[in-house]
Length: 225
Image 1 (cartoon, helix red, strand yellow):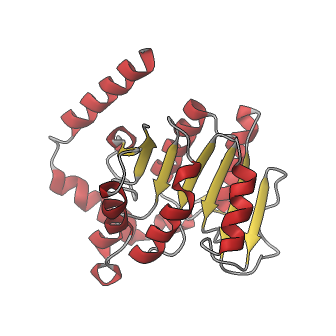
Image 2 (cartoon, helix red, strand yellow):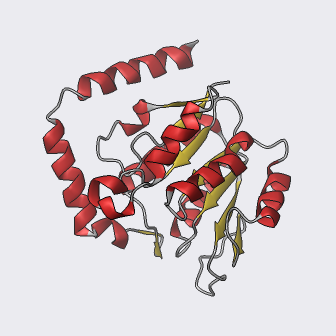
């Protein structure tokens, strides 16, 4: 009960925050995104292509939900997988599976909690089967950050959403891209809309957007049933 009360208070705080100048927040978001400063963010020396404000929220989610397995689609340089594994170290449990269509790189950060699956799409049936095997009976957090086309994100949601247990999260990244790059639409946000229209198992957790500048608007999906 205390958890729900605390979440309700956070939700109320978010609604109050929405009264802030939306145009100012939008400009701040665009300034950060277009500066490319976030592309230079590193975690213990490894490039982590994320908005640091979102990474802070990830560790909060991990502390609250204690995932035993984190599935990340889209490895890039491996910095975000390294970050997630480091939080697992601090929590004393958990492992990360990071998937990328590009072949494995020699310079990926090595960590005993991270398994890299390279050279195959996150929607490849063999990859999906391997991940589902690893996730069996494990508390799982899913982070989708690979091909951001609507069709691909919808395919990833179909493949991995049901791995997430009640109370845990499915995070769809870069749902902000339409704000910056109209040529990349339809993208993750449109995939989220289609996904939520077909299920009542997940809801958008707006409290996870509390820092206002997020690259994942409407992308923090919490399983509720």
